[in-house]
Image (cartoon, rainbow, N blue to C red; front, side):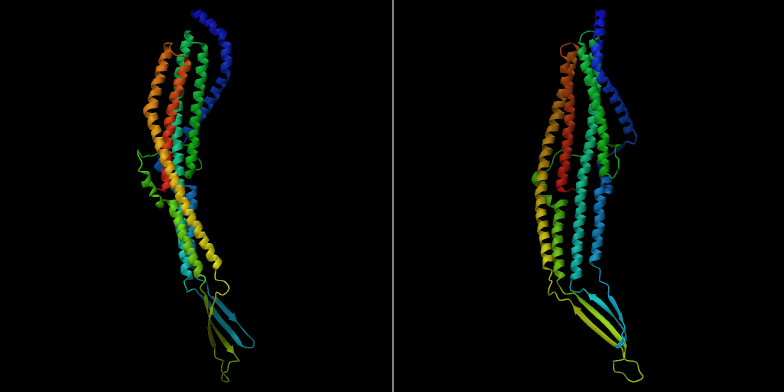
Length: 430
């Protein structure tokens, strides 16, 4: 019986070898890529928590660095708004009248124009500061999503590696059965192909970890974060407050506060333009010396003539009406934008809230029911195959169902964490 099997195996060797040639080449490429990936992972791997990632993002995220630079510009604008105009010095001479004349012209901004300009600049500074809060809100969400993606890809890599190990064990079992003649040789070809596919999936999942780390590193101010690894999953509460309670907090969110500050800034700009309608004045002081046309006693120098005048700018042709209307129109835009932000934030919050509920229910069902059942079914099908009561197709389907269930749990957990990040983003917290 054993000699007969050897002859049959030798006769089938050529077709089996031809069928395995592409898969063997894939196995070699997979092994090479896996070796390179492991080398990259081992070199400079850094474990970070979500708090660490957020701390670094708050310090060095490119968008926040730019936003803080804009704050410096806005603060300088306040000083510029309060700058006094320099006085003008005047010097002159004449051949017919005063030999030496001099004077100074001092601008007088005393009717509230300077104060209104400073208040408008301060309101703009508050708006820019709220822009930074909005930028941090966006950066925080992006950092959390990138961290969750990194954690998820690490989980995928672990699941795919476990699947590859299961396929290797199954291949060994099938080969033993083929060798004793209790299973067709086609089973060996098929299970080997499944093992190569599982190995390729594991290598791809491992390579995606570096890509996810690079994406997270960008938000942390790093040029290449391929070595970053998640030390733990993102914090997600077990239960949420009622949706109406969360909706009531929207007015305190950073985007809404930013638009409200822009409305106040538009009012301050309108007040500034109206203040600029008030007349400006200039005080001119001067003297004329050695003027021979001035009566004086013989043998004495002519007396020095002192003069003073006040110039007033009369707003006759320009009362800055178009400027006022422009700032009022900008105020209307700011108010419309504020309402739009409130509406969109409420919609985002409601959608994220319901996504969180759906992902939570899915995660509970998968982890508590589907995964244990799929594991039990895979083990039972494998045992049945060993005793010849099940086909290899059933074993492979059961293994695939178990792997899919584990991956689905990771996806549900990641969806839950992403939904919580979206909720925090809609609330503009913290």
